[in-house]
Image (cartoon, rainbow, N blue to C red; front, side, top):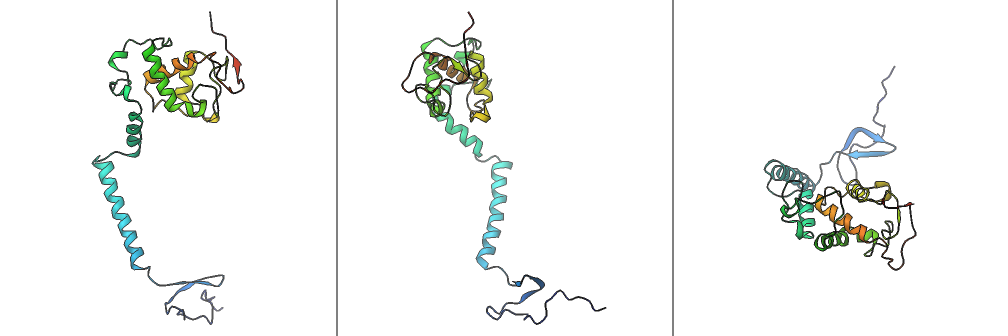
Length: 208
């Protein structure tokens, strides 16, 4: 029996338009691949990309000479939180805040003022400046989706609610900042801002 030849018969070995050779036995649906080399500039870009990747890995990952994207992001976020620059590495708690009772909401003007600043920078885009709600729920009424206690609010900020579009802030805000903004949010109760979003969730009645 005669062997089947994969190369179609009566086809030229050289492309009459470019004078380049065809790759033998490489034809599909009438399409043939030329056996020509890529242009010099494309080869140069490919080699340069490889060299750049090696230098990048060595610079940022082996020698630590420069900030990675995560560090750059954290540094940019820190510029908007100058009040927290004196925080120690231990849990992000400033020396002046070591005696904070995290189980109770803040009532002092300074702490609530810092909470208002955190809120304006990070929360107002979804809850609006006065807490009346936009993408996020209204924070000024008595109704809550995940509980209205201080610890409930802290938990939501720490863990997020991904299905509702609420991200976790635990890696972007310190423990003190989360306590400050949670305390500030509680002060928004009953403020009656204009055009509030309709109530969502269940009515929360504080324990007496």
